[in-house]
Length: 605
Image 1: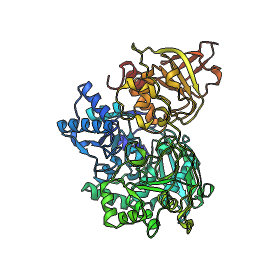
Image 2 (image 1 turned 90 degrees about the horizontal axis):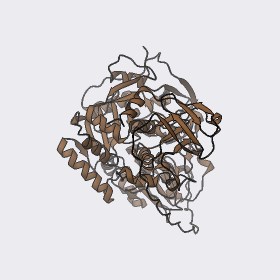
Image 3 (image 1 turned 30 degrees about the vertical axis):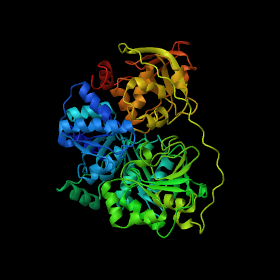
Image 4 (image 1 turned 30 degrees about the horizontal axis):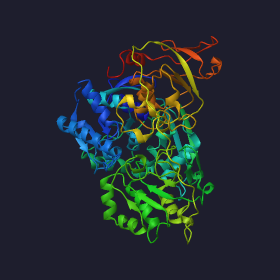
């Protein structure tokens, strides 16, 4: 049977010669990674269930979200994982190493056609080398650490072909922002996307990584590239062995196919709040900025740093503007030092950090304050994700040019004199923290009744649900108080929620990070279930594995439901009944896998 790229990888790691979309298979995992958030909960799950380590040689910790250990909770969590790793013979890529998803490529642990899981929601970055990478929650990762396999639903595949000649001013970041502009945050939700075309074939590994890293922001399972000869050569040099190339079959079938003309792509920027809210840079040019950030798993590679150095050489950062630069790995940092890039950065006035995630994590450099406007090369600019200010996403060259100009601009439009600041309003003090509620005890019925909260929003991301500043919390009982405290209009949800409540919401609920806390916070409050038009792929897995009911529906309109109506949800049939008026709809019932996990109280039950 002809196979797409992801189908071929999954089949090669299962006991089946071929797979089709919708199949649920047990898949062996070549590389299993836990980070310094998520990692402590993985260890707790292993210890609480007295589980073994399947293969220490395939199992790793990467301390990349807070590589300084500057926060006491992170420091404690890192040491907790270190001790466990020493006892079990597991390798730790510690705070001096860099971003885990980059390290597995750089160290030759992941190769084309391999499978990788991590507590990092951007593990699908491995699509850059034609490998399967998935971010998963701590229960999922604990199970893989223990057994070496995990269940996975084979996704449908989409083929995107880029025709035409790539314009000289279009960076890899511009390519993926143009794709986000075309497909938004959920049109490709749950699909594995393969990219083709002459312009795609010519992409370097660093450029492929930039594009693949933002598959999560498009809702895709992964953005996958067929490895080029150059990528194969790099991976073979890192792995120290000859590798078999992998590619989709020529007659593979795709759920959808799209052809886009890359010659029509324009330099793009994402406006604050939503990565998919992309506009031509000309639409936001000359907006005054306070800071710029170059780094993250999307744009901290050596080619990115060279672009920044080309812009900064012989120039100074605008007065009052801060530029923070963080390489992805220590090897990239050292290469930048050897090439003289670090000297250029320091001469321009930039702050250079040690390798790591930086602006995407609360504990390392990259955060901004209330009222601060930042141009960032990261993959996300959700409200609160990189701090309290506004974040525009752009390519490294644009971020550097903006830092020199003092406002958003491009390298070819840097003014002779930087922009001058005008007075800004004072920062707003943070609101008080909500008090926690305890989750109710009891068995899990297959028919649920409760009052509804209707949240009419699409693309509610995990930072809106459970913000990254709380990621060091590992006690589920403490999580509920922070639920939705970063979702505009719902900041007081934790105080209003009652045991037994049910949430009804829109498309792509749970987009973003792989954090398990975004599921467990609802369990902590006693919320019984969430009904949505669709869920982020990682979020849905995390909920299923936590035995937390999530169901999808096509439309809620026939239910004629109002805020705080009481409804009944039958998990076995999918029938949802409004107990106030007797009207019903049929949601998608639990699959056999979901019901089995639910009945035993979770994946590790």
